Image (cartoon, rainbow, N blue to C red):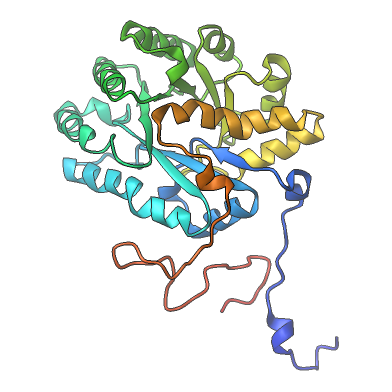
Length: 328
């Protein structure tokens, strides 16, 4: 078409371009059991839905700077069981969460005591599938104190536990986390130990815990390494997540890893287990997960409101094709 000719309405319509890797995983469903959607955009939700992600778990975590009062925790926990659950549904993704006091903020003991008082108000709410993410960061005495208290809370509520293993001195922190969980009488099968690597995986699996792996650029696991983990250890009690948050992270890490596994000759059934079924099996121990909620497609009405608000602005259509230069 010559540039001197006027563009018609048809020419201005955005052309949807599907990411290349999705062709390799077409028809597969994915469950990301650790992703911090509060810090992600609605564009991310749309991309995740397009890539086959049908359900997610959002653990309560640190927001990048310390919170200064218990009311900020109340509002945050409320958003996890309220607005964020609604926002996810507007893109056809079932949203669950785990509720807990993260290890970083456990070191503010005056505030931590107040947070412990409100946790029982949230852990029994619909969509809460565990207590988490809890555990160690700097492996301080305060972190251990509130980790132990939250293990008891999970045991009382009959909820799974989602453990954050530390970035520093990971092997020792992981071993200590499991030791303490066993001291408190938790069944390892109800405990998901997250952010594993080659150094920790054998012990976690040998002791009967679930081993979760985070595909996160540079700081945790790359997906080429993840392929080798599955080749070496198989699929039993192994799951993959993105832990996408406000940092340099990728909410499509799970489907991208599935595509890489398929390229590397991992069977479709093995891929299904580590990117979908194992997360369901582990967290369904909460009694909160019904696969019919996300395996049966539901109509989406994006004019629906949550407390008077929608994901739409000014009547806009939320689907924005980033491959087009046209923004309406």
